[in-house]
Amino acid sequence: MAAELPSQAPQTCGFPLYPELPQSESDLKPLPRRIKGPQLKPFDFQGPQQIEFLEHLGDGLHSHVIKVKISEQIYALKLFMFSEEVDYFGPPLSCDYDEKDRKEVTAFYEFLDPFNCECRAFGRLHESGHPELAVECYGYVLLDEDHERALRDRFPGRKLEDIFQDEPGSRRRNFLTRDGRQPPIRAIVKEFGTGVDKLRNRQLSKTLQDVVQLQQLGIIQVDVAQRQIINGKLCDFSTAMTTPHFAMSPELNRHLKPWALALMEFNLFLSSCKDYSAFDEVVEEWNEHRLQKDHVSVKALPQLYGPSPWTYNLRRTPSRERVFTHVDPRLYDWRAHARGRDENSAGGQANGQSSKGSGSGRSVAKVSKTRRRLKKPPRWYYEGSKENMAYLRNLTNCRCYFSWAFKRGFFIPTRCVP
Image (cartoon, rainbow, N blue to C red; front, side, top):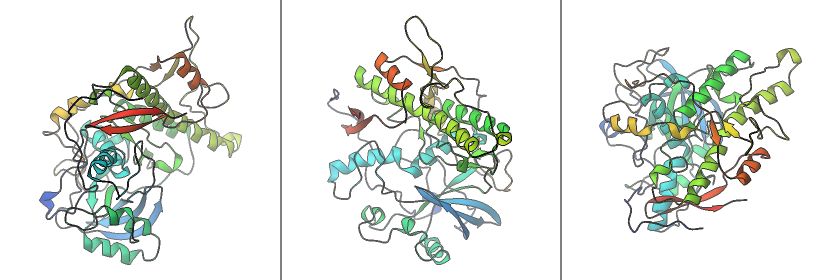
């Protein structure tokens, strides 16, 4: 199914794929740079880059986390892989693409690369004045050559091989920077903390409220899991989508046909529900392996019924059974912050501003003066076709139900995936 395209559209997203190591500190700019939306500022070393690598804390699908010391303060440094996995909505990345196809692939990368996802999510928290909804983020780092060598020396062998990517044909070696060098290792500096060993209703209630408020700020797919709770707050946004986003913001493409808009809304509703379903799965898994006295009772969707936790119903009306989730993330006014982004911090380090509650002694993200208290949001009732609502009631998993193409500067949903 094809959508009608304009004859011309603004050129977006170039090549190469990854940010370059700057010639000087003044060359560092907030990232990501080539798309609309929130950005994260570079970490302020208050001088030359100086990092002491202390301990490997763990790894995941997209990254490794290292305990580090910077200016006598302890932080968690999240090192991002040059991801090879094909979990994009669009075509897989390949160094064999010609110039036209590379431009298309780069467009998807800007929105979906895990490093960019995390920069945009933390940037949104900072520009909206709500950094308290996650662990403190102090900005991004591009490791210089000296620190990459120090990292290799500190962790020899194969532990970080998916970060360094030394083998021929790897993503890092194929997608070089403009000067022909391998792109620098990208990282984000966060507060150091501890996880949650024992779930409690009070902690879970707070986490659920944080998820609701994140969605109010236009951030979804936040990977809710017990392992992601550090110092009582969510810490990982490497899979997050933040408005404006081609899969969330139809206003980015005024040429979308009604069928495409309906498809986008359906998939966005599913993605929004997934955060709450994942929360309930955390509770269910905890209770399944604990004594009754240690059970927790907080539920994101307490009205659930049916064969699986994905299906639920509010009430019956004469015309239809209504299906809802807690927040419509499209209601967030991202344009308001875009208009003031040049005057306000886009997230990351800022001299002279401290985030309330920081124990590091180092200045953190400048909080936007436009901060507003987040009121209880209206529920989002899905008003799509009867077929889609019936599908939602019998849903057993959540996934992307269509793919995307990038043509003439616009993202377009192209087909339904059964």
